[in-house]
Length: 126
Image 1 (cartoon, rainbow, N blue to C red):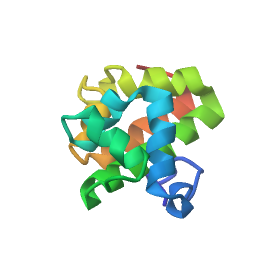
Image 2 (tube, rainbow, N blue to C red):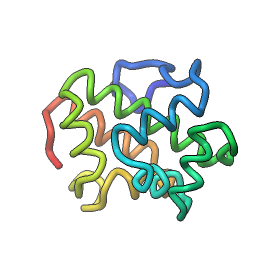
Image 3 (tube, one colour):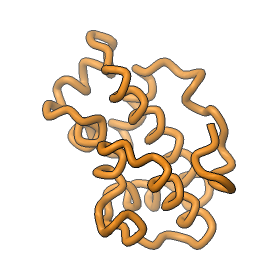
Image 4 (cartoon, rainbow, N blue to C red):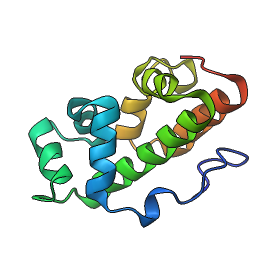
């Protein structure tokens, strides 16, 4: 999956992963509360149930989770884990001064992908 034309070079990373693994890794990186927010659910406990396989996310939530996993790993591979963590939670001028978490929750994938491209090409700007 190419996130944006000329965007991140990472392709299809999450496609071959089980959603439970994706959720666990995201929770380890940005907390269950943040994962719940970007997935569009209110209860972090629901996210923990996804992580242990007791529940499955809806299709829209799973798309958001896979997208987030891919962009987080792309940023981490170029800028490092701390930058990826800070970027996903910070207010971003390229996203109308909203956080990438909010943009992902709103399914603004092309816009978020362009913001990812910017952080990869220009460095952290959150």
